[in-house]
Length: 397
Image 1 (spheres, rainbow, N blue to C red):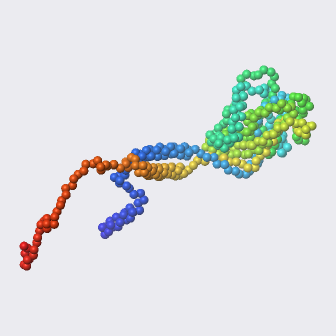
Image 2 (tube, one colour):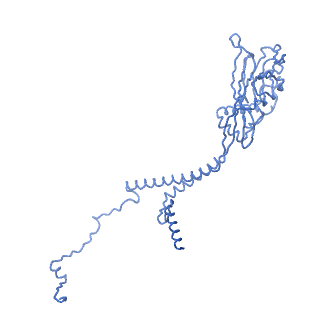
Image 3 (spheres, rainbow, N blue to C red):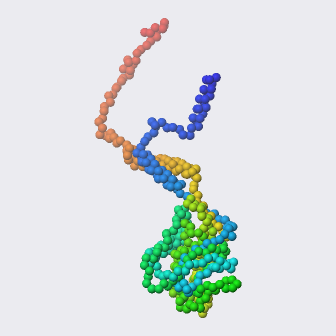
């Protein structure tokens, strides 16, 4: 019985051996060459480079964008403003009105500060850098915004303080502060005259004390953002500066505010982005261009909310890609080696170069060897064969 089990086991092992898809070649039959060694070195170097690249790719992350309806309609909206208008603070008024009829008295107030419109060299450098970043953002949004959200980039710093105050009176007014608004459409504006409330609701701007020659709505926007200031969000109007020589000029900004939730490895925040369209024109009643000189920012809320989530790749995907890289490079290098060897053999055989050059022998110049001749006659052959005769009784004679 024991012998029978052993025989069956050996038979099963032989069947398994027949199914071996990876037969081993004895080293005695393996021929190594310098060409194969060179290709092997290149193959290993290429595999190492690709593995390092794959590790770096796996250590990075991707941003996934999803969209959903914004249901937080009763949530408040914070508006942050820091802008400078090239007019005295006593000659202009800033106000904000939303669709509910509420105005600036219900949302807060802005601080006013008389300043010089001209920037110092350091401030001008900062302003130009901010404009360059915004311009680059508009051209390369997806490439830069992904990096900013992943790393928690907080901007290029704050505006530097003026080193030396310029001579002459202060000719501009800086308006800065924050409002807490309803999440509905509204209108923020800066125009001539102080803002006064009007019963039962609303407001008016008293411009009778300001001469039309004093109108100048050249302005610079250092900050115009919605929500809590958040790292990773660069606002389109930050650093914007427009200069006009017309006294009666109107600037109109149309803004669409988009609620945004960002969930990254660095932070988890709720913020707002916005897109802006800007128009400006000179008021000329005789030419049919009517209106009120000033700066008007009309904003509206988007019903769609953007959700940005940072995701990492699973470990199984990393391992599968590594196996594909190593196996694919080995298989490809084997094909290249075989093809190159075939081409070398073909070229060498075709043009008779290298080890395929046959050895040339000159038979004309080689010494002739004489072969002795052997002339045999019939008698010699007859005599050389022994004669055998049989006699009765089985005896030879």
